[in-house]
Length: 497
Image (cartoon, rainbow, N blue to C red; front, side):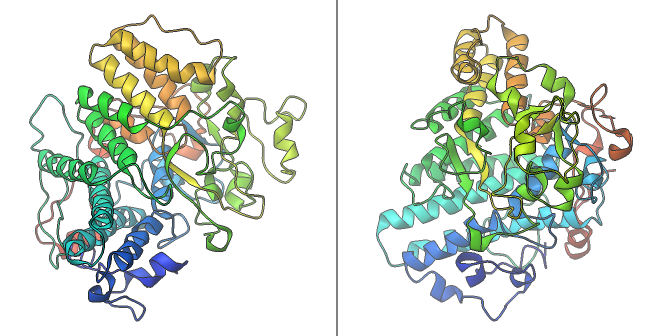
């Protein structure tokens, strides 16, 4: 990881405004803040922490690498539920074809690997230095707790992409990713998957112990968000009792959005059920390097105009007609006589219209890709709790939790009488509907050891290059280690092809 993890700096540009992609790649740029100044006080250390918050939605090497929102799109298009209606101008098409993430020379593979290790590196600098900073202990705890949560979150993302899935049945001595808990100058070997999850849990537990429900912004991590991350980790490990408990605690204090709020564009951290998200403001827009430049209905980018994103037609047909969420997609969008009038009201006369296209995500306007990006919502916590209870054998409780969520989306939904695997599958269908486009589908398929199956849907053969299936557990579920890492880290071992 020399030259990748080693280039960890805290930059003024990361926490006071926008920056170009090259700024944060330099080892010692002229605008870097000396470490001894950054961590003198809790005030300056909080500014460094804000640099990590900013790292979740700035542009990196290309417009398709819009930090976490860019990776969210990659994880979605690797699944079957987000459909590219055309190739558009090419962005993310190679990923949808399952070619990009298994190419060690891919710039996107390099970006994803380096991105999460950059978050880890900046978090390590904070963790190492915050105890000696001047300031109230409660501020030190908040800063350190958030940094620990970020370190856990970044390792968690890396191990899910670059390693084999965690097997709850035991073992997990397969190669994971290198654990990095201090500023380093040389890369080390890959730890086992079990070791990585042990470290992740140690960090997130420590974060929960330090954080409170208080915070300055929804982009910051408080105890609710840390518990939500813990719930995700436990669910992935098959630790269902912990997953259910943490999800329930995490959503405490958050209410589910109303049916009218469902149609407001999923673009505002002020939505009452958003637990964690990045707020974007007009003068910090990232233009084409934005989640909404690719996933929205209305931003006038070449990609959106020519390639509106659609829902898997099979999944759409599973949505009850009385479910408010069914209106987030239009099965008749290509027909001007039948399509949702809202699509025309958005002044999209020059935009292509394809059946099942989405109106879930709305940018600020045709000329602006600004929009807040959701990372965690209370609805996800209901779904984690319900799934964990169902898979843990608590059918009645699981059905009740699922009812609490779905009855808010569908006034005619009835309490489920299903049990066991059938109930768990009902939860998963609701999860696919509720979290469509928010970055979860690749992870869900992998953690449950399910195959990719796009057959019989509206997936366009020429767009995905005939990539309709991928067997569960194949080597292609592991992203390749980037070639730069292989060339500069003598300890690194590549994933098999």
